[in-house]
Image (cartoon, rainbow, N blue to C red; front, side, top):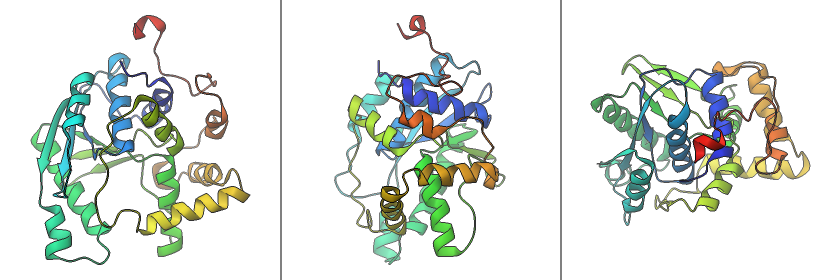
Length: 270
């Protein structure tokens, strides 16, 4: 059994704060096979064991058509977690790179992937889709919107899509990326290397590097930006009476009042 207790503390708090999960939900987890989506998969699979509101999960991977994409280890992981798994072949790579020949492919690729994921979720009877965006993603999106578009905003923790009657949830929004990376390495998650030719050549990557550079001089800048998003309740975020920075700085396994709420006991873990 994979021990995701620390990840669970972040996930449980976000799920509770934003009422992401209700009794009877069937949730499709978008599994790109990167570290973020695999961490989300493990977190929700374990949350399902003890959460008072009973819900189902399935995992969906879109095969975009890039070379050497092998999802066999993801299938094995899902079997270990007891999660139904589906790999859906698509022609997204062909459309974006071969037909449209997009110079800036990320926007179109994202729309096509989200559309295909939502369609498959509906087909399989899901009412919610869980995405693996974490705290760093929220801050980076905020900065991208500010720098490149001149507007204040980021993605929402919960988004209802009236056209498809689906609700998007992001249970990792309180989770710092370094926690995701640490968990991935600790339990040796079977990450599939991204072979997209645009990987690491995007505006998001530029902003990620900018924030990293600023953090060298202003240590808490990431948490201050995220705190401001919550304080001003931008795009559905809520004010909070706990410090993510305080928890992030704690040693692994420490219990921080107000956030370590996995709900597990030693008896439940055995």
